[in-house]
Image 1 (cartoon, one colour):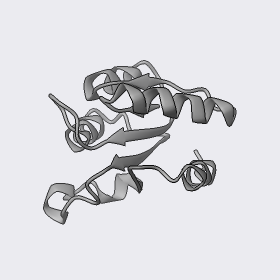
Image 2 (tube, helix red, strand yellow; image 1 turned 90 degrees about the vertical axis):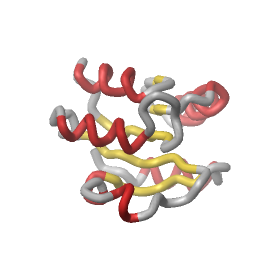
Image 3 (tube, one colour; image 1 turned 90 degrees about the horizontal axis):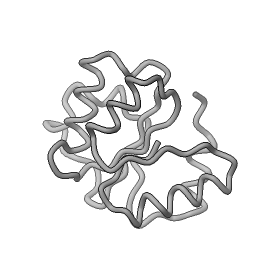
Image 4 (cartoon, one colour; image 1 turned 30 degrees about the vertical axis):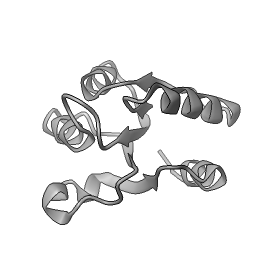
Length: 117
């Protein structure tokens, strides 16, 4: 699942990963991500940090609070680098990696293919 408020990112990521044989869900906000998890989504979640209403870290905190993180691997998509440790407090163990925008396409595919869910 790709969670990002930028429609161009959603379309690009869907195209990239469908070509790799993945089934791809895209949502443009944290609330919809949580809803997909509540409906049983399992797998990899690529989550943008900066989104309106509920940012990526707030979304991740809510997911953990609701215990929806079982069988989910979270990778953070960021243009701003890794957040400081105060913002990440208690979330570090749930984040598999950070994927920097703009994406290096080959590295992105390699990173996702290496995740065992």
